[in-house]
Image (cartoon, rainbow, N blue to C red; front, top):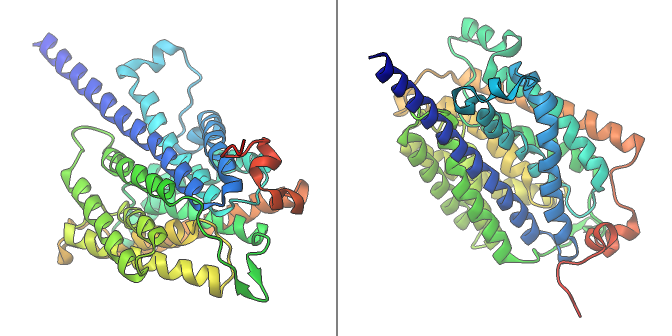
Length: 402
């Protein structure tokens, strides 16, 4: 009997480790999606830079999160013998890998907003500070109960802040951090003339679409595997992700008037919004959540670029910042039993938690990028920007003209 019980426990631990490892690899693959979405959106003279930024940011994020960020968020360090770290099939290590891919999504999101005029080394410094300190601070509050915030919310409102897969913790944080960086950088040269928006067309729609598709596929690891165990896995999360993706696509297609850039970002807006409540909503609620997110993205992108003159190249603030906050609030609406959800959430708490995410991101973003701007500068020179980051920084273009 003891041998049987031991075998069952071994099977459970092994299955959970494999399950989470698959999720980590799927979210790791999403970083290729971030890269190609940016490559397809920026002008050709900045395509190489887009690819280099995503990979180097991921490498720096790994070090910052391994040595500092994960300890701040969860109180766990890996300063122990390998024999101890490999216990339970190394589940603790794979959990770090999985959550690292979330943390590294923050600089990948920011990269799209600051494209075409940001310096590399200062951005890597910003990545280090954000992934080591700013992001883990809020992550630990939301997902590990740090500083007593979640118990306080439960005692006063009858529910904790719910964000199953990171609408606010990951996406809203990334989007609002990016807004701070974009505002401090200022618009690209020639983007506004005589107060009017000058169109900078995407360089490669097929690459843009490829990036979108890679992100869509990987997102099912992002959401479903957030259960972090086979026993906790739910098909409801998968179907809700699908319905929100479709809702965002249809809304962006209609509101965006067949524009391919809006169309391929629409499903991403829906997926951003459904992360928080994907484990609670009815599929119809997820569909509505995604559709509203798709329309929000198009409307806010147009307003930000034209009316507010915020030169956010990929529209990461509307896509991740605005739609992420909507996702946190939508969880409190469509997660209610009265609307077909599972319940156990409070709209008031969801609003408070979402607003807290905005505050932490803006304070952290302005502090990090503000200090770097004062100390070393964060923007390319006028000449470097004119010739493009590819030739100016990497000494090679994306396409050979020989």
